[in-house]
Image (cartoon, rainbow, N blue to C red; front, top):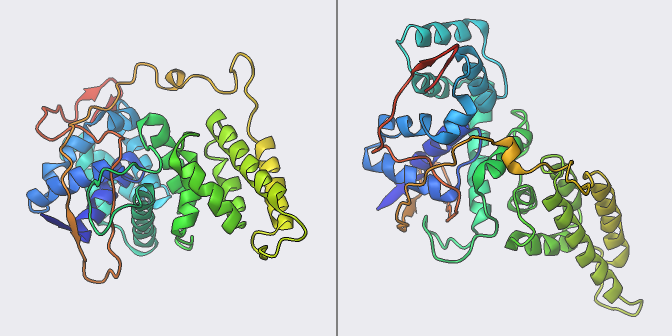
Length: 347
């Protein structure tokens, strides 16, 4: 079975609109296959997206007007125009539209700068997925090799939302290259993820990436990031200690002075990460942020290997990869759509 780029783009758009973040690789594959099997009919999957625990956490019980504003902000980085907001709000409150219908209409109506931002977000989201699992070998599937970073749970999802909004902040924002995105992945990384070792080497080869790390720390100023920064700094200091004045293998890129500048930059970054107090007050437990929030349900789909067809106009193939983050529940489950609850609405 093959899935073309257009199907993958559509699923990424749904993740950006519904969840405000790039798709996780396993979820991207699962929903792309579902969409392909249904001939591209979005009605086959949008109910599952709209009623997933993640969507409920983001939008459930919020007033319709607030939900519509969040959709616009997620997709286009702006508030809706007053006329559009009034139109969609009235349609939903009269029961003529469900909120998932509004979501699709907003996506379909992207024009001018909105279309540029959405297209760029999709491109960046694809690169994000590709960077997570480099061992793709021309296939959209799971080869069994480990991912370089785990992308799972509400905490990582929130960091990915902040990252996507920061990276694509305007129509003129440059699309980061794969090495820059690998540094960015440290925002969701644990200290023992393989990406940490890879970024250690990247910092030595490409010192300019240290500035990239400085920006990412603002997304993830937590104890994991503090540990990662210290580990990278220690690695570079060890390399500096190995150099001698007689070395004939030094280059302009990895000479000791350049590396010392990186260490200085890392010291500055480290100073701006909050210090954990004995009581842990700077880093409250994750459960404090997500009390009484149901964890995502996994359909535990099989892990087929799918070849990506090259879509006309795209010179490169997108090759996503496996991941452990939970995709939303499958459309075979029963869903209760658009129930009024107090002053807010569920999807």
